[in-house]
Amino acid sequence: VPKIVDHDARRAAIGLSVMKLVADVGAERATVRAVAAASGWSTGVLAHYFGSKDEMLGFAITEIADRVQRRIAQIDTPDPLQWVRAALIELLPLDEQRRVELLAWYGFLSRALNNPDLSSALQSAHRELEESVSSVLQRAVDAGRTVLVGSTADTALELLTFVDGLSLRHLFDPRRLDSAEMIRLLGGQIAKLGSDLPQT
Amino acid sequence: VPKIVDHDARRAAIGLSVMKLVADVGAERATVRAVAAASGWSTGVLAHYFGSKDEMLGFAITEIADRVQRRIAQIDTPDPLQWVRAALIELLPLDEQRRVELLAWYGFLSRALNNPDLSSALQSAHRELEESVSSVLQRAVDAGRTVLVGSTADTALELLTFVDGLSLRHLFDPRRLDSAEMIRLLGGQIAKLGSDLPQT
Image (cartoon, rainbow over all chains, first blue to last red):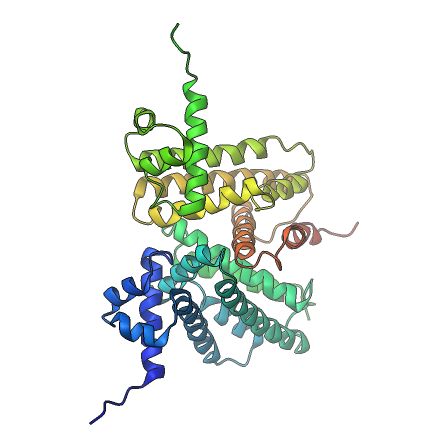
């Protein structure tokens, strides 16, 4: 009886293994051989799915981006500013899963500096998030929930930039910038979006 | 005739070599042997100055922090908000020197995650900058140049967090977030500090 293999599920599982290894040792040392050793998949199976190490890394990048987008798609609130807050919180390293995603993301960066394909995969993920946040900010403007100083695109970029800074500084100083402090500082940025409203 | 050695200058030069190597290959691969190979100093000379690899890395961290503080100390403007803007710009990767400092800083991070001494050196540098910015913001408040929504400490941390996010995103997407765009976005944050002033 031939074994039925769910290739998509297997690729996703491999993507997770790659992510964890990159978070742990960086992208340079996450070779096909190292992923095989860490994950239990044979180098033969890995070679079946990915033609090269960079193809494997690129797949892991899109897997992480998809995970984040899936979590954000589940946010269920009618208020656009609440949605923005919840979406940005999904990006912060508040638990082990998001911490691993973040460390892997930084791990890909050093290799992406010299690899246009990986660089492009990372940039696409950033821009998709910017567009999601920007479009919801536009809904907030249309609903009279906020008056923005700049464009929705700029405000989305500013918020995501702030979240990136928070996540990075958390890694440098996790006790000082703990989860509560990150959420408090992020909340301050969201609150400012509503603070320019005419007081009626 | 005995050769007179300027030990401070030599240590500083070694610190620069360590910084460049860490920016290039990361902290794990910046061993004493690798620094010797890259810099031309013998492992014997390096061993004379540093008892271990981590001592050498820790010295390079304080060297980078000192370089940044020296540049900031030279900012000459009587206006506190202009000072804050100029100080934050010194942190952005606008030229090769600041780009190398930034990449080295990120390079130290992965090793600092498991090394309290390195972690503490990085944290001290962050907190010193926060205190510098915070104290100048207090002068801006006292001079009636700004009305802050939060405390000066929070505002300083928010600005530095934004700068960290800009620098990081620049590395991910350097064409989109080029120097002009980073300066524009930072300028927007500074402008907001003055925008709540009563229009007189």
